[in-house]
Image (cartoon, rainbow, N blue to C red; front, side, top):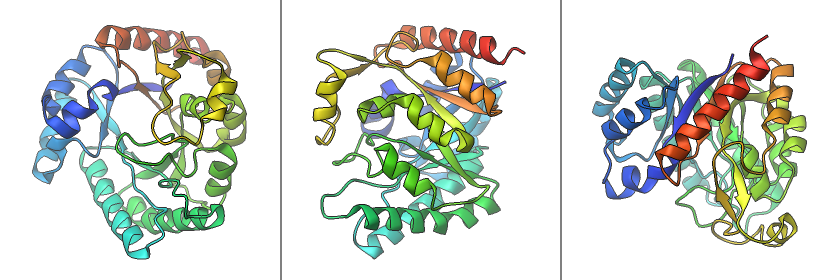
Length: 294
């Protein structure tokens, strides 16, 4: 049966920019959710000193949780080869971090969708960089997971492989037991595309999942599609309690169950407070029991 983790979506600036929240405070807060694990983000200030990694792992495990996933945002689509090499080096440091935290999954991305980089170039740059990281990850028993992402919080441009045709072409370039997909249905909506269509195309390669939900504050999906290449986050869509938005979790979970998915589902939610996150945890626990109980 899949296990639930939570990601500190609502506290990213507090943890990564201002330092208003310590990692220990987040771990204590997350422990009230009664989930199996925590997904950390590589940019958390308290993780920048490797001396703190063992302490963060120990505190999490003392509260009955693990740290299965590390969320990272390497930018592999820069036209400068020396820049890409620096991103490979950073990803290797994050793989070390993931392993030290006890994690089995470390995220990769393609990179930013820079106007000057062609589709073919971007796919080649990203595939080459990811393949350069795989042996390093394999030595540490870590699997690299690529997310159908929208945009890192701290990037200028959206994800190069945001759209499913580019995403599917990119993952087709990489064949390794230490590489798989972190499926995020909400990000497909942000791309103006169908989450179920994407899942049907990649379900056999999904090894982890991000769970969230989006709802339209105004306009329609067609309006969203017209804005899909804009810089910055789509303002028409907002996070909400999982199960009350646009995603069909029965359709998603039935497909994942059918292909034998039995891994981690990490919740990206709670932007309006912990009460919302508690509701999302309860919904997902109910749906997991419904689909995997037999």
